[in-house]
Amino acid sequence: TLQDRLQSAFKNLRGKGRLSEADIDAVAREIRVALLDADVAVPVVREFIANVKERASGAEVSQALNPAQQVIKIVNDELVTILGGETRRIRYAKNPPTVIMLAGLQGAGKTTLAGKLALWLKEQGKSPMLVACDLQRPNAVTQLQVVGGQAGVSVFAPEPGNGVGDPVQVATAGLAEARRTLHDVVIVDTAGRLGIDAELMQQAADIRAAVDPDEVLFVIDAMIGQDAVVTAQAFLEGVDFTGVVLTKLDGDARGGAALSVRSITGRPIMFASTGEKLTDFETFHPDRMAGRILDMGDMLTLIEQAEKAFDADQAAKDAERLMGGSFTMDDLLKQLEGIAKLGSMSKVMGMIPGMGQYKEQINNFDERQFDKIKAIIKSMTPAERDNPKIIDGSRRLRISKGSGTEVKDVNSLVDQFFGMQKMMQQMAKGGGIPGMPGIPG
Ligand code: GDP
Ligand code: MG
Image 1 (cartoon, rainbow, N blue to C red):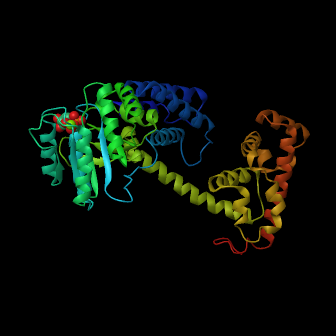
Image 2: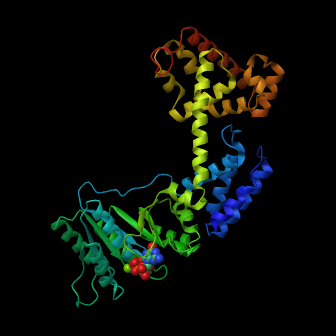
Image 3: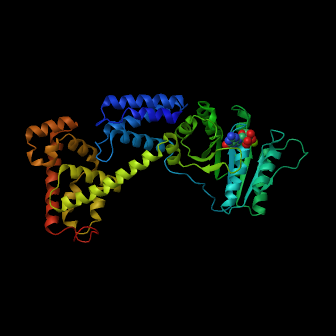
């Protein structure tokens, strides 16, 4: 399985003190094969591997994590990203009813999903109504009535015995009925064929146009492997959808569809179906799915704890050292990285009371030069970072070459650094930054 393959890829990293390019290449190759074997689409695999490699080789030597842990963390993060990052919840209409339309191939699990979704919504205090717009298959309407009955919700269906009705009309009438009877969510079940079919795609598009749904859920069988990509693209073009539901995740799906569909379509996976019972249904959480794929729950928890403990420890030490008046290039690098997360340097500094007097230095700090600065500092030796005073002309030349910058860039960084160092020393003498919680003032 994908899990086993990934774990064996990481195994070779255990006991390594440091990751070489060759190590990274080797693990990347194994992950690549594992993903392809799991039917993840080729372009998705390519991007995934590129991201993992880039992050792994750019990774700082972490003091909190060993190399195997670092790579596991990177792979986990990238899995979460590729699965969509955040959990995407249903967007309910401001003026009910919220209309949710289901689309997908025949057998994907739409009708079953209609029942699952209805039950789930009902449990959250909603009052859903199902609308039967699959008039293609003789049993489709009855099937929806059965699942609706199991879920204990109303089902709107065309009158029997009128021959084949018009699904667009049924959809419109269903929506009107839901308004009249004050249902706050309408779930529109539609027909699908075994393969991509222009006529049926048009029908789904027409239904969509008629009921103007708040969500169009593309329902896809996780077992269909590489076909998932073609099918998803066809529905994206033919009907368009706002979210994806993966079904049959209980089967021995190789997980490829889950990993491909989101990046290929750009649409979030919102729910997962995991069995035939109406309760076999869950909100899709990218982080949990990534965790399941990696199957390294304990390891990830460990990694998280190690990082947290290290952060707290390090932050305390940093504050102490800064307040003691010593400030190194490494500190600057760390500060810059922290600031990048928060927003701009001037914004962050501007929020600190008493920093007005250093306005010039702050504004002189060109934020667009951020990457350049990082590159320059990284090209310095540890001794140079600790004591930038030793950075003479020839060292500046070497650093500029190493970082792909010009000597004047190095000069200006060193100058700015001394400015900041002085600022820190003044603050230390003044007994800290006034008004900053946690810092003596
Ligand atoms: P539709 O044609 O898209 O409406 O698909 P259906 O809802 O009729 O489902 C097709 C078949 O797949 C039925 O036999 C369902 O019981 C089954 N099914 C649907 N969802 C799941 C699931 O998550 N897991 C499993 N194992 N079977 C499912
Ligand atoms: Mg159906």
